[in-house]
Amino acid sequence: MAHGRCRASPPVPDTVGPVYEPDPVITCIDCGGRAHLNGHPPEEGWQPGMLTMYRCEDCLDGWYLEVPDWDDV
Image (cartoon, rainbow, N blue to C red; front, side, top):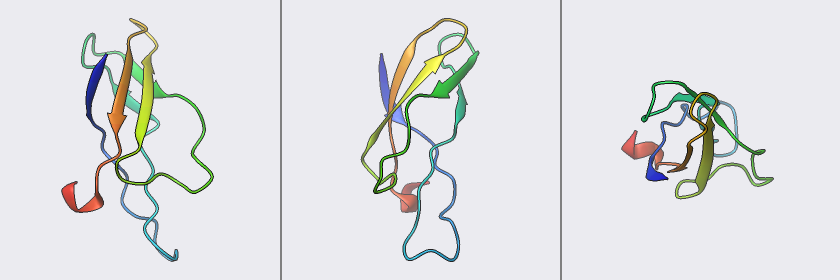
Protein backbone atom coordinates (compact mmCIF):
# COMPACT_ATOMS: atom_id res chain seq x y z
CA MET A 1 0.00 0.00 0.00
CA ALA A 2 1.19 3.45 -0.82
CA HIS A 3 1.73 6.38 1.46
CA GLY A 4 1.43 9.84 0.02
CA ARG A 5 -0.49 13.05 0.15
CA CYS A 6 -4.07 13.57 -0.88
CA ARG A 7 -5.49 16.73 -2.32
CA ALA A 8 -7.79 18.60 0.04
CA SER A 9 -10.66 20.84 -0.93
CA PRO A 10 -10.27 24.53 -0.07
CA PRO A 11 -11.28 25.60 3.43
CA VAL A 12 -15.04 26.09 3.78
CA PRO A 13 -15.88 29.82 4.08
CA ASP A 14 -17.82 31.22 7.04
CA THR A 15 -16.47 28.72 9.55
CA VAL A 16 -14.57 29.29 12.77
CA GLY A 17 -11.42 27.78 11.27
CA PRO A 18 -10.44 26.00 8.08
CA VAL A 19 -12.32 22.77 7.39
CA TYR A 20 -10.43 20.20 5.35
CA GLU A 21 -12.34 17.70 3.22
CA PRO A 22 -10.42 15.00 1.36
CA ASP A 23 -11.72 14.26 -2.13
CA PRO A 24 -14.38 11.51 -1.98
CA VAL A 25 -12.98 9.81 -5.12
CA ILE A 26 -9.42 9.83 -6.49
CA THR A 27 -7.71 8.07 -9.40
CA CYS A 28 -5.98 4.81 -8.45
CA ILE A 29 -2.27 5.18 -9.11
CA ASP A 30 -1.95 1.47 -9.95
CA CYS A 31 -4.71 0.86 -12.48
CA GLY A 32 -6.30 4.26 -13.18
CA GLY A 33 -9.64 3.17 -11.71
CA ARG A 34 -11.74 5.07 -9.18
CA ALA A 35 -10.63 4.85 -5.54
CA HIS A 36 -13.21 5.85 -2.92
CA LEU A 37 -12.64 7.38 0.50
CA ASN A 38 -13.52 4.81 3.18
CA GLY A 39 -15.13 5.63 6.49
CA HIS A 40 -16.71 8.74 7.89
CA PRO A 41 -15.10 12.07 8.76
CA PRO A 42 -13.83 12.30 12.34
CA GLU A 43 -16.10 14.21 14.75
CA GLU A 44 -13.48 16.96 15.09
CA GLY A 45 -13.15 17.15 11.30
CA TRP A 46 -10.17 16.34 9.11
CA GLN A 47 -6.93 17.90 10.27
CA PRO A 48 -3.58 18.13 8.47
CA GLY A 49 -1.47 15.04 9.16
CA MET A 50 -4.45 12.66 9.59
CA LEU A 51 -4.50 9.55 7.42
CA THR A 52 -7.31 8.79 5.01
CA MET A 53 -7.95 5.40 3.42
CA TYR A 54 -9.04 4.88 -0.18
CA ARG A 55 -10.02 1.59 -1.85
CA CYS A 56 -10.02 1.13 -5.64
CA GLU A 57 -13.27 -0.26 -7.05
CA ASP A 58 -11.42 -1.96 -9.93
CA CYS A 59 -8.21 -3.54 -8.55
CA LEU A 60 -9.23 -3.35 -4.85
CA ASP A 61 -5.87 -1.87 -3.83
CA GLY A 62 -5.95 0.25 -0.69
CA TRP A 63 -4.20 3.58 -0.27
CA TYR A 64 -3.41 5.48 2.92
CA LEU A 65 -2.93 9.17 2.20
CA GLU A 66 -2.10 12.02 4.54
CA VAL A 67 -4.31 15.12 4.71
CA PRO A 68 -1.92 17.94 3.73
CA ASP A 69 -1.47 21.32 5.35
CA TRP A 70 -3.60 23.78 3.42
CA ASP A 71 -0.47 25.89 2.84
CA ASP A 72 1.12 22.93 0.99
CA VAL A 73 -1.73 22.48 -1.50
